[in-house]
Image (cartoon, rainbow, N blue to C red; front, side):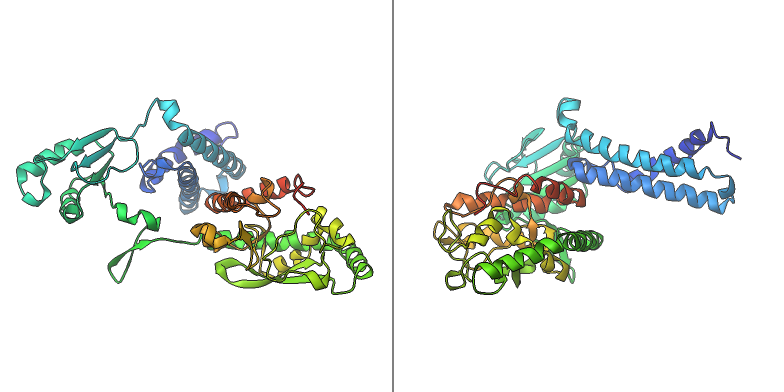
Length: 409
């Protein structure tokens, strides 16, 4: 039986070599992994959890589970997992400063004619006549091998007609090799895939995996359900005030662009006179807007007019956090939003939100100039790139600071 004082030592001595073996197999220390702080932290945590499961499985098979220090393993795994994630993230984020330079050697082979990729290279080598991949010369391959063996990554910038020859030459060089293809830049490719053994360029993937979508949807239902129950008296009072103030429906429903660029009807408390409401959204509300009712002014200044969107969240059209949905006729400097920036459609890869990163940064109100839209779009795309459930929680907490914003009218 394990002794209480030495149990953690035995577990650690067993777990450490298994961790390094599994981490190596999962490429947790690879060049590609260590180029991204988030991916590097994920790989480290993944290797740790797999290692712990392996130790538990071995203990079970050897019938040592009865004397297994369960509490030590549970607490130790939890603490180590958090420390591992944070430590790897911070280390990889500051690796260049900590080490005093890029620890990975990146070599550029350039033919002297083609465009040079933007980046920092350890070595820039002109291929010239010394390296001719079309020659099929063993001496040339030997020279190439001796040159690239010190590199962690090799990038070739050459004429289009020589790319296939360079690809064939480097496939046997035992180093990560890449061919620079500037024509792909307008596509912003995410990677390479295949269809029936035919290579394809991946230009878009959903930012959330199956588990992340489940987690976000569960979070939305729980938060929206609780908030709706708590605020129900307020919602009823606002509905009565709207009815007493002006003639017309309590709710204003408008077609907006949602996830996958599909349209849906958003719910808001009606804050404008029915006769002057803008269903297409081509005219943004402005300060001292004569269309806004007395109660509507209060609703808009306090953002209470947005609360009925909780029903959109429960229905599944929206999320608590995400890019704000826009009306079809929304304009910036007399241009439709998608005419201002072609990346506008990218923001619809996730469900629109009650609040978002653009809102907590103060980008709300009328879009008078094109930059009003670009600032919001940049924040939305940044949110998609860095999404996590903790990021959603942070944005929710920060939203309280902008509920009474100067541009809320």
